[in-house]
Image 1 (cartoon, rainbow, N blue to C red):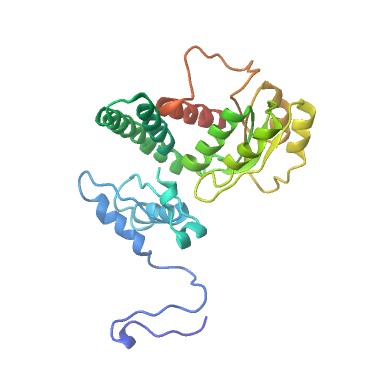
Image 2 (spheres, rainbow, N blue to C red):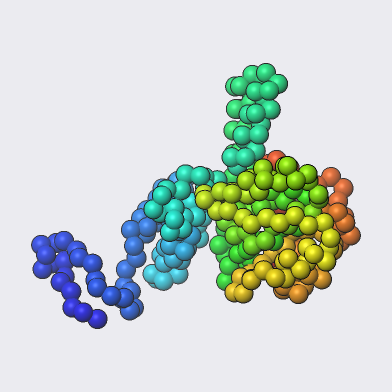
Length: 282
């Protein structure tokens, strides 16, 4: 590598090294999160990519004489685009809260009661999500966790599942197929809902009722190099096996599920969907 000046030669100032560095012997400034963890009751939130947070997560306990212990490090899950343009749209249960505020406003309910309910529900939701993050970070090397999703269902559920999985869990929409037959005059409005689903991420949506056509649309999609998960019905069982993808049944028919009172609606429904999804995967 080209030579470079040391900090001492520059009067204590550091300069960038030209080219890659082999056998790196230091961490980046995100290592400061270890100092935050040392504060009782404090949790660092990294505004960066998950890979950066993961590297610093493992550096002190695993690569530095096993100092410190295990801890949870929430990340805003930034990519290159968000680093440039900002990532406020990715923070964390916005849709349920927004829905509840709309309903409360329409019904003329007391805003303070509505906000108190939302705050209590979000506190519980993110408590469970924090614990899930520990599982997620620990299992990425043990299991092949999916990165892309295929959703085959009617429009309302399709949009809700796609938006949740992209916004809350960072998956990438691979192919979305709407299985009912909405009138032509409403289809452009439905397609518009799939644009900028979360932080600028958009999804391509198709309309098809016939199972053969639905599966052909999915088979014709280039998924090379992508780890998939399929949300659909029992009819997608064979297809998901062909794609080497786990299947989560969210629509009719669902013959491999026994459901008594489970729902995927609201805060508790979101947790139920996460549980069902990753139980299917692991």
